Image (cartoon, rainbow, N blue to C red; front, side, top):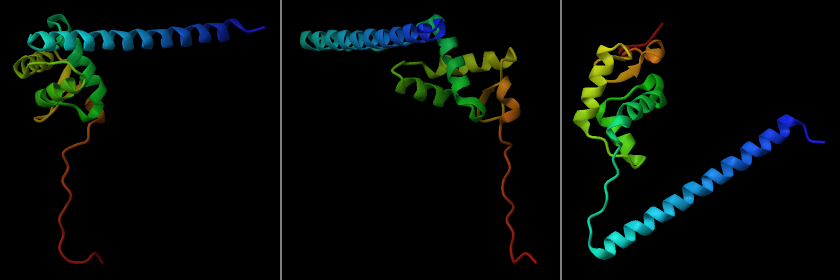
Length: 134
C-alpha cells in the first residue's frame, strides 16, 4: 500500500505536468493569435510587465542576481530575455526608491538586496609587482 506522502508526491508531480501542458497550450494560443494579427496587418503586441508587477519583477531579478547584483540596464536586458519589457527609467527610479527604503544597497555600480550585501565581492584589484619573489 502506498503511503500518504508517496501519494501526495505523485499528485503534485501530476499537477506540475498538467500545469506545464497548460503553459504550452497558452503559448501556442498566443502564437496563433500573433499569426492572425500579422495576417491582418495589425501591429505586434508588445509584452509589458503590468505596472503593479514591475516592483515584484525587479525584486525577483535582484534575488536571482544574488551577490552579483544588477543595475537598471542589466535588469531591462534580463527581463527582455524573459519576454517582459521594462522601461529603463522606471527601473532606475524603482531601484533608487528601493535603496532609499533600505531594501537594496548600492555600491556605485550595482544594486543588491540587503541580504546579499555581505556576500558581495569587494572591489579589490590585484597588486602589480615587478621582479621576482624571494
